Image (tube, rainbow, N blue to C red; front, side, top):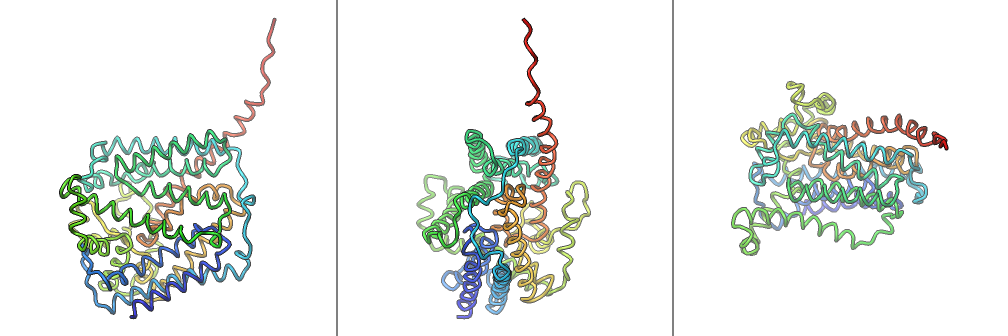
Amino acid sequence: MERILLALLSCVAFATTAFCLRHRSPLHLALVLGVFTLFAGNFFPIATLIVEPLSWRNIVQAPDSEVLAVQAEYVAFAAGIAAAAILAFASGWLSHREEPTERAQGSRSDLLVASGLVLAGAILYAVYIHKVGFEALASRDDYAEKYLRSVGLGPFASGINVMIAGVLWAEVGHVGPRIKFAFRGLALVIAAWSLGVIAVRTNLVILALGYAWILCARRGMTIRSTRPALAFVAILGWCSLELISLWRGAVKEAGSGRATEILVQNVESNLAAVVGGSEMSHPFLTALEVRMSEHEGELGGSSYWNAFPALAPLALVPDRPLALAEKFARTHYAEMAEQGGGTAFSLVAEAWWNFGDLAGSFLVGSLAAALLLLLETVALSGASPVLARTLPYFTFLCVIAHRSESAVLLKQTTAIALPITVVVVLADLLQPVLERRNRRPLPASSH
């Protein structure tokens, strides 16, 4: 009963956030964070009332009091998001609906920036493929080898993400229809490569969310005008991803011919595996393990400060501070960490570990939501065309935020923001030169 009550409190906090943002896009970053706070905080505790979970995690069977305590942390995080939304609404930020025509005005160098990002990303990723090796990259049997070969190659591995940022920039930017279609074709190539060759569905999700964010902004869609059926479609999409994971396991076990038969025969164990191994469950389980093995408030905010020196590549600075996820994996899953594996971490666990019960989660939730509200307002007001063209990419970070931590989120943000900054500066320097060349009169013909 207590779990259901806490879930209802989470729903109230989310409904409050949605009400305050009702004149904004259904993919407003603060709302996206609120949606995944709701699911990450309640999926495991509610699902385990019905299904006995099956997982490789150390602490699937935790005392009910600890499960309730972690669920309450997520309620506090959701309340923080709602508090930031209420404050923004009361201050007038969210009191009117922005028209599509008010979206950020364009830059004359959009084509230069989009092309530069794609080119820079392609070069980085080509180096990454060369260093890791195509066979290891395309292997679906030994992910550990791929991970171990990639150690220290983070900037090169992020090349494909820089390319994604480039195609999304072209979609938002003021470029011709044919050029947009060319970049959309490149997006399809990236999606096909990610799914069909390297088996990384993350890139597909980044592209899908980015284009969806742009579509909502372009059509002026709001939460009020969004049909409830879209929520069903989103849930169906998540179920499809879980089903794909189960299908891969069945294919690996019995081959593609008997995969469907295996799935049908093991419905109960498959449901148990989804509850215990879902992307929605791992952050909650991590928070449980941290809560039962560490001391609340012990870090005193240090993990947030250490997020900045942790940006340094491990190959260049071997003694840089480790991210909490790295420390956690080495402590609780040492064998897996040695083989290149790891676990999802948790924003809620990090907040509790730094600032203690409830207050830490509320503080981090409210600050995160306030930052997202500010970024969306600046981007859509036209004050920063660059931000308007990069924000679609970062929708994905709000989706994975609850399975990450501050250091990882900062690193992923920097990996995209830094090359974008460099390319934008170079494009601004190059644009006047190209314009002067185009205005130069043609030499007179002599007869």
